[in-house]
Image (cartoon, rainbow, N blue to C red; front, top):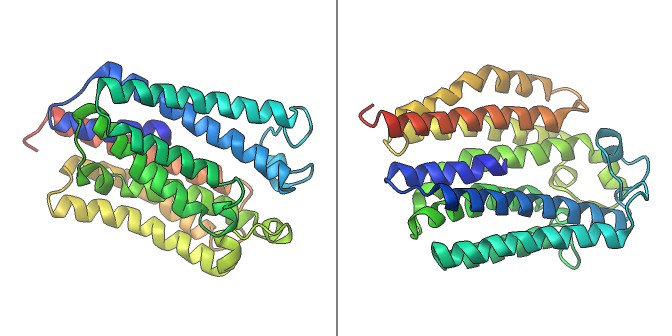
Length: 281
């Protein structure tokens, strides 16, 4: 997801003839550290809040050393803070080498990711988790990558990244629909809990359709190159997920959504690369 968002913003800058491999590499490394920091901090606070514990759904789907006591809280927190430190170092370098406009974007991302799971806000507990990750990976990250390359702010990377941001949000929504009963039992009022399983599943379906409609509309109005229609090669997989999720949400709902997001994003980026290489089409 992070690779897709950073690369998308960078390719949009390259369409305007602006590309620095070094700045791209630093931005990507900094954002990977940021994503990892947010995930580790999420584990730290979920254990602290009693959400992640032995037997919780998340411990059945992935390794979770914090929940099993294999990683002391201080170690988990320290690791997260260290990763945030890498993020801030990368941001400071990019602000110096590219544009100081990078700094407010980095700081906004750090603050948002911390309060996604940290007291007193705990945004994901207030049914704002999906919106938060959409704003991160659908707005801040691609816009930041674009600013790094061009030194200017533009609506283009924000608008073009909307489908990717929605897909990132859908990965979280699928996870939360699957875990709806458990999350409700421990007081975690996710968007799925707030809406209920039926309405949350309908929202998933509607947003999935919106992703493809957005790209088609962008091409028709000339905002996106025609090559971006390559994303429709993933439409059969999306329709399969849509049909499947109308029943019981499968255990692998979020990784299957993430797999779709990856394929969609890769084809989207291939379309932009082709637009750079074959600009007249």
